[in-house]
Image (tube, rainbow, N blue to C red; front, side, top):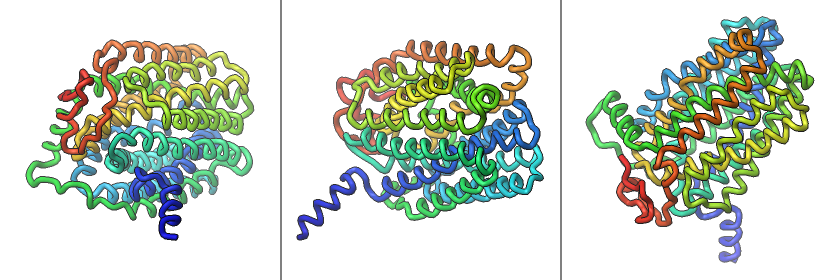
Length: 433
């Protein structure tokens, strides 16, 4: 009987899915379920309050600006304090800010400056949460199954995006954006409760000495010494900016004018989420030897949604484009997480993640704020074609970095403190930095 119970326990949860990994996966599922609907709700809350495309861009930028300002500090804090406490505090701030946003929208008294302020508080929470969460996740798995673990995590996370986007769009159309924002606040409360049970006893004690500036400099040396790392971050600083502007500003406007409103746009985003689930499922089986080469080649389709909105194509075609983009982008996502896991020492994961996030979102506030003026100056169609072209150009440019083409997957387990000096003999970029 004991052996049978043990067999069932193993069948329910693989050996690589430990306590922290399981809690992180469950919490990410809950958070994504709420946040993807809230993204749609926030845009249509602005439009229903009498705003235009420029106002939608300002609210989106209000979230990203504090994210950029506080990310590096958040990364240093997450490598200095217990990461799960940083995550729980950030979730609490997100819960309160979204709850207040929901109350304002439901009361019908929401003003633009209030929506911008509450969105900025949410961005501040995200700035401290993201480096801590990424560091916690990367340290929660070890060995050759890390890639599969990351793929399953992202599959669960993106699976929630499918339901969250589709349900959020439908709820906005049926009962208004305020209730979707309230549901997001509840999701943050549940996720924060789960993350409170994370165990950080396995994290090595930090050596005494050094301050915040020293931590930031140390993280910068780790980041700048790896060409594959900063090259891809620069690539996504541009790609994320233009795609963010297209999704946050132009997408809802095209949906309103040509597709029928929030419901169809939520459906298209849901197909993107479905694509990411399929892509993550693919990555549980496929382990490309050249991690970043395979991943970067799969970034080119990220230009397709902007091009589809520029035409604009019928809803069925847009959904197909979004699905394909989700599949290919998830190949990059899993490959990127695997590269970080095998190359970056555990005690520096959150700081490196902070520089990664910082570069990736630094231009998003500017792009979303300028999306409205760009539409007025060049027209929505030209602006969307420009977004697509920039994605193609920067992705082709990063392939010129030798380390992006040559970094290879390790086949042996490497401990956290020695990742940098334990590269596989076949890896031409082992020991970078």
